[in-house]
Length: 238
Image (cartoon, rainbow, N blue to C red):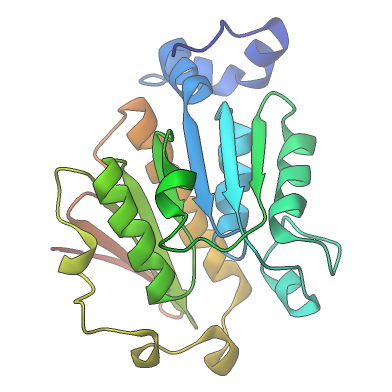
């Protein structure tokens, strides 16, 4: 469904988009008409939610069953109150930043049984979760529903981002069925540098805006990696 015309206040708010060659009014209208689901309102979800809300995505859904803890505040920058549900906290942040964005809260765990029902009707999904089990469920549902998926991952000083399109290489090409969470280091065990999630989450938001507006070449069939210690970006195809 086409978005309503931009109001005078929205025109002032998105002025830097409207004068941007390649974006303009048509790109901003696509953002306003978009329905986007963010899975996980933690380290990666925080910059994703902040930048997509700021950019004017019309309908933003956030799913997270967890609550904000003190150790989250080192990197999950949209939260400030310990003990509050992350999805609700994220919605409050997004609404305060941009009241033109409609935010839908799912304070529950995304699982195989509810994934399709929650994801249906969205134009794009972004996965910022930290375990392979959930990431695999999200990818399977996105493929079945033919929804593009922006996926990010981080560990210690390093991160990566890619895009799974309905007609492109899929999740299994990167993560074989035999891989499980026991093969990957956990944030609790190895630690993570706070700004790293900002780098990768912002790149995820950038890819989301590109997919929605048709600007540029998304990371479909490509993985962009970031080495934070040596300040190097690399890329490989899959």
